[in-house]
Structures are given as structure tokens and as C-alpha cells.
Image (tube, rainbow, N blue to C red):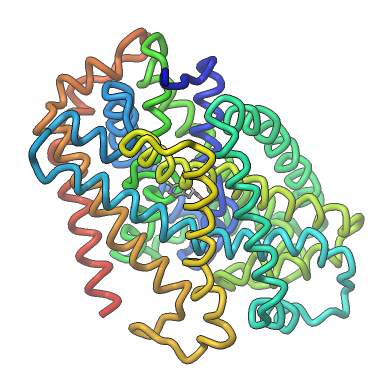
Length: 441
Ligand code: PFF
């Protein structure tokens, strides 16, 4: 069968931005910014996105387009009879692991679209959240619904599923973010939040800040697991990669920064703690919404936003796995989507039970979900990123990658890209990965 192609450059940019913009932007970015001292973290994060994220993003897209294959097939085609395809295999494995718990968290978000309708200022938000995640029936139903939506989109195909969906949902996502920002910054007392968000606190920087910024750059740009190789493999030769990657980077960064503008002014306006960690979204924000005028409406659209962002990301993870089976084993797309999606649903059950039946589980002090997250973010994605940059920089050759990325581009990349990719990216990411591992054990 002829390989599908995105029908336009916009289709590709929206799909790749949809993959990039996700829980990482709306749930994770605000809370790590909150716990890392606000604006100073943002500066380091921007540097990480530009100097580490962009080179890998371009490399993955180029590798995907030139081979027109899934991650394993791409390495196999470029370096047959070597161990390099294992890098692609690590990517497919990451797809299974990350999507399984990502869907659990997305399920919490989806349930909050409806739950939050009945919240009042008197509600006990920590108890509601803990009650929700430590029960079984509700979280598993929402995890199941979320996986089913992901499967249905991927089963429908690249153009009829992914592209159609992102063309509808991505504009909605931007509209919602702007509505939320307008609400948040016009609240009385919002200025304190803006100043926390925008005024750098240099005393909050340490090595950990750099490590967090680089890990976040990886996760948010969907790097290190072949998602961008896979999406690049459906890109026509007529389109520019250096430019498309630039747009993806700009959209993704914009949404992360805008999420901060939507969240911090409101949190400060009601005197709540911006550094409350992962609970910021599910405990602090619902409290904020119940206190603001038209709060129920804003709460509804906020959790809708979270779900939309998560869905346009989750489909890219399942696509990695499905593309592999379709390309390499000639599975039918629908069969691959349903079977693998179901398997991923099952793999998500242990992290889902980590707050109830499996609450005794502890790996280096982490619960099941954090353990899945730690392995993927601290080991799998950086390893994938290091090896991909070495492969593209030194084996395929950065010159060849530059040629592919610059095809039909007005914005050309060259020596800086090559130097970053060949030397800076692998060294910096290796350093950070070892630091992260050392910190945890
Ligand atoms: N970029 C997504 C986010 O920020 O939520 C997460 C993600 C999607 C990671 C796809 C990896 C991936 F392949």
C-alpha cells in the first residue's frame, strides 16, 4: 500500500504541534516552573528548547522523512545489519510505557471536566482528588475511554484520523487558552502572580534546575522516542523541515508560557501556593475556579483544554507503535491500533492502582506512576535522544541531515546545528541523565 502523506504543510505542523503540546505543557510545565523559582526556570528552559530541543527535533523529522519508515525501520534502512535499530526499539517501548500512564492522568483530567461542575468554595479539594485517584472504578473507566478515543483516531488513519482531528482541536485549544488568560489576568490581585512568573529569582538556580529544564524540553517536544521520526515519515518531500520544526517549537513554547499566564495570576489572586507541585492542576486550580466569577464555565473549559491537549499527544505515541507493526509486519492499521491500544490500557492498570491496591509499592520511594514516569523521562527518552543525535550527527552525517532539513526552505540551518548536534547535545544530555539517576538513587 502507498504510504499516506499529510495533505498539507499545515496538517503536518498541527499534528506535530499537537503531539508536542500536551500534559507536559499544561500540567507539568506550570508546576515545575512554580517549584523552580518562576522566571529563571523559564529562561533556562528556553535555552534548552533552542539549543538541545530544536537540533533533535530536526534530526528526528529528517530521519523519518528520508526513510519514510517507523523508528525501527528508519534505523534499519539507514544502517542495516547493525545494532542501531535497537534505538528505534527503545522508542517503541517508550511509546508503550509513557502512553499507559499518560492515559491514566488524562483520564483524571477528563473526569474533572464533569466533576468540577458540582464543586463549590466549600469543597475539600485535596480529599476529592485523593478520593478520586484512590478509587478503582471511575479512574479505570476514564482511562478506558481515553484509550478508546486514542485508538479510534489512530485506527482511522494518518489523514482521516490524526490530521482531521488536529485541524479541529488545535484551533479550539488556542481559543480556550486565550479565554483563560483573559479571565486570569483581569482578576484583582493578579499582578503578584505575573511578577512571580516574570521576575527571575537567581537564588533558585542549581544544577537540578538545568536538569529539570532539559528533561522538560525533551518531554514537551515529544523527543527521544521516535514520535517525530514517525510523523516526519508522512511528510512530503516538498515541505521544509527546518521551518516546520521551527513552527512546532514556537507553538509548543507559546502554549507552555501561556499556560503559566493562565494559571499563576489566578493562583496568586486567591492567595494559594504556586509551588504546590503536581497537585497544582487538580487541587489548587479547582479551588481557584470556585472563587472566581463564572468559575464553573472556566473550570469546564480548562479541563477540556487539558483533555484536548492530551489526546493530540497520546495519538502520536500510539502511532509510533502502530506504524512499526504496519511497516514491518504488514499488520492492518485497525488491528494494530485496537490490539496495541488494549495492551497499553492493561499496562496502565498498575500505575492506576498505585494509589489503592498497589499503594504499598515503592521503587526508590516512588509510586507506580512516578516509577513509569522516571524510567521513561530519566532513562528512555534521554538515551533515545543521545543515540539519535550521535547517529544523525556522526553515522548518517550531519551534512546529509542538513541537506534533508533544508529542502525547499527559506530558513536554512547549517554549522551551528551540526556542532550542537554532534557534540553539545549528546554531552549535555548524557551529563544530565547521569545526574538525574545519581540524584534518585
Ligand atoms: N509532548 C507531550 C507533552 O508535552 O505532554 C508528551 C509526549 C508525546 C511525549 C509524545 C512523547 C511523545 F512521543
